[in-house]
Image 1 (spheres, one colour):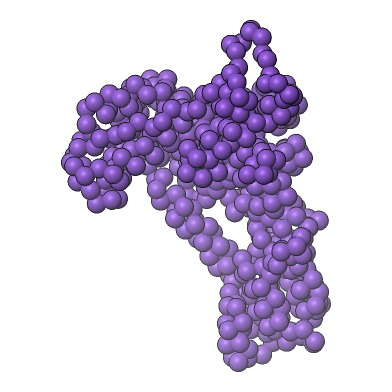
Image 2 (cartoon, rainbow, N blue to C red):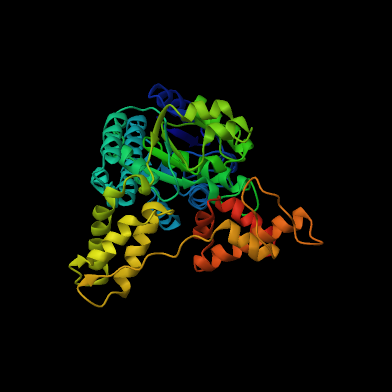
Length: 464
């Protein structure tokens, strides 16, 4: 089923195509002028646009140009009452008409075939997009490295839930590989040939996140120069992965809840809705039940998302997986760097296994990558990451004193109020994290265990 716009100055053609295409299950709108067609294209998203070439004032070529500019994903089929090869050449130059059909007694059948070809091309394009995007994840279960009981149980859970269409909520600390698990669910599912679309909900302000997820129409806001399909529509037939779901504002949570309930999206600036068939997988590094209790996350949305919960254990709770991960990353980065590194220095491996890895697998991967880049022998020597700065030490640096153990008496420095004291601690922690992470703000936010949005807010607050 497709959204189709028909434009022809002959009412009988519009009525004939409207009746015939609706019988085929399509959603059809008809107009009888080029100006009306342009207005419709500005106000809604169409899969296929069928327009007559010869029309008074604004002809079909102008409609084609406008569609190519405003809605480039739409297929345009040109029809004409006479053979006009010059118009056909101009149509190709104007932006590439999908088909060019002469009006005849068999017009409806030819239009049906043209629509079928256009939709097959659209599906193929989306499948190619999905295959390109998921090329590195074809063997996703093999990419989940680990043989510990926790990882074996995780892999079995992925195999079990993949065949369902239920919503999945993945819990786990930052760096544990939640997106890798989401990709594995997708690749093992019947939707594997369709798109897997990943969205970091904490990386967008509310207004931008809405337009990214649901799409928008030209003119919906400043900078909206053409119609754009939202990521939910891009993922139609496949899977959308909503990472850091806890960072969504309450207003956006309401809109997402409606999408999950109605299975439709409304692009920003549109009055019509688009049906979607998308599996939703969400992930969080926070305890959403506590966020619900604190009125920071909607209870109804939480239960909609938490149909199938999956927990990804932190690396410190499965140290037996560390040697496998280290060897996996060694092979990966040694090959990429063209290095001949045959093994890991035994004391280095022992030290890696003893380390607690607060940044989990992501931190371990970065550590091995750095070691490979610096290694000059055929044996990998690894320098452990610096320990995370202690909050108590940071507080001493900020406040000019030390914080006593919990339960003791806290004495603030003379002349300093609590608000300024806490502000000093926060500012020092931000600066320390930035220095530790080489100025990369997203890594610094992970290092502090806060969202990127909260990190940016604090950076702005303290003028950093």
